Image (cartoon, rainbow, N blue to C red; front, side):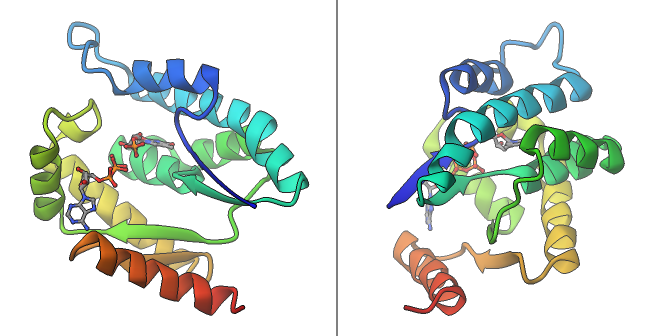
Length: 177
Ligand SMILES: Nc1ncnc2c1ncn2[C@@H]1O[C@H](COP(=O)(O)OP(=O)(O)OP(=O)(O)O)[C@@H](O)[C@H]1O
Ligand SMILES: Cc1cn([C@H]2C[C@H](O)[C@@H](COP(=O)(O)O)O2)c(=O)[nH]c1=O
């Protein structure tokens, strides 16, 4: 069984947190980086205990759209929060549950921005600007360089079928049938 899930937003609490995190309605009182970090952590704690651990215990293969590496990239490299505090919070929220493999879909920031524009109005993170997006990309690069066996870069240029084929090749190499 394969279970597809995501952070933030897979649980009922997570859906409420996702809309708080991604809305642009905070203009008058911008969401502070530490508050943002703690909200992502709350989503993760709920998700790990009520979805990820039960599904793994039932024998499922779990495919999660974003996990702790996104916090290191976005709140660490992007917002500039202390990486050791992030590591401690990630460890608390996950109680040590790690991914076997993280696929980083990498795209030059300008092309990613074009795709976002084509999709319409962006969310709060997408509206954070090109310099922020560049820091994220550097962050994911550093994460992948530090743990090359666990974090694999996927070239996300090209059409969806091409990107899917690249993902399939990495997964098949990792877990041959
Ligand atoms: N290979 C591709 N070529 C062109 N457009 C793409 C491709 N992959 C995704 N898109 C488009 O880019 C937009 C964003 O893609 P997607 O929904 O997968 O990202 P996302 O998970 O929302 O991204 P993020 O997590 O950074 O917000 C969508 O409009 C999607 O149709
Ligand atoms: C888990 C996680 C996510 N984010 C950011 C990354 C994205 O901008 C949004 C989620 O939107 P998506 O379209 O579902 O990818 O949240 C983050 O900043 N920190 C995190 O830990």
